[in-house]
Image (cartoon, rainbow over all chains, first blue to last red; front, side):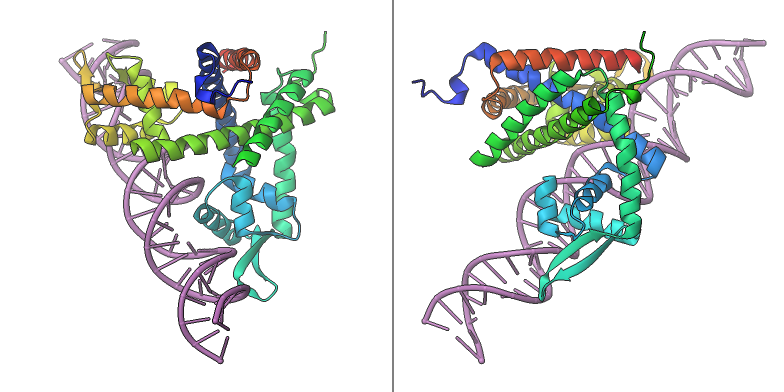
Length: 157
Length: 157
DNA sequence: GCAAAATATTTCAACCTTGAAATTTTAGGC
DNA sequence: GCCTAAAATTTCAAGGTTGAAATATTTTGC
């Protein structure tokens, strides 16, 4: 029926979307900033390190560097640096897959796994606290909406 | 009535909040990444530069460095660097307020203002495109929710 | 008036981030 | 079996980010 491209939609709707984006970004920054402070204070670590450990925690057998960067939506070079530092700290080890000497599989050490478990527990409580005023119903509705948004995006790109 | 702290809420609700946070963060990263690419490609600039210019555009008489960093939710030192580079590029100038030689007011030059106007126009179209599948009604509802979240946060901190 | 506290900004080291180039290794075409 | 293309990662320069220390200036208390 309506074949006009997205940019020719009702102008008021586009203003509303812009407002939504700005507020979403600010809310995300507020929460991220608070999480960063707490991770630093309580566990002497950073959000990027937490993210990497979180990804690895769910894959005990480890992840390729490229899978890690794709999953986290960051560049390859970025992951290299973060993993390097986690290795230095003894939380992650690198191995090769099969006989392929190009690949590098990162996985948590026991110390890394234990450390992440502690952080994840605190993290969940922090989020519950920070998003405490969002009702369960709102959270569920919003969450579904965002998942749909992501799926759509993935399919198109 | 119920005086239990946020962390003692219904566990299922907390899981739902955690899921919401993770999805919100990922959605924000997808959109931010796309905006970064386009700003780089079309205007040879960065998101932080865009943010600073956006803030200054709304205050033609300029902003204190500290107001800028508070508004953008970033550190003081951060703003110093970004403004330095915008000054080098001829988009921003610094001045002193009154006789106070501690303060530094940054404001857009004419070139900066013209450049931002062009970027803002493109930016609005991009957001309309990227969030095109969010209905106007959803956008409004979500937007109100996020504003309430922010207001609450500001009052508590 | 002056010393001390408060205010505004900058500087700096460490880390994060990207995108492009370089490196190393494997796979494919012939 | 080679040679070239493809794949996986690392390296690197430039910029972004924080938090703490340093600098410069103004205000306050006395």
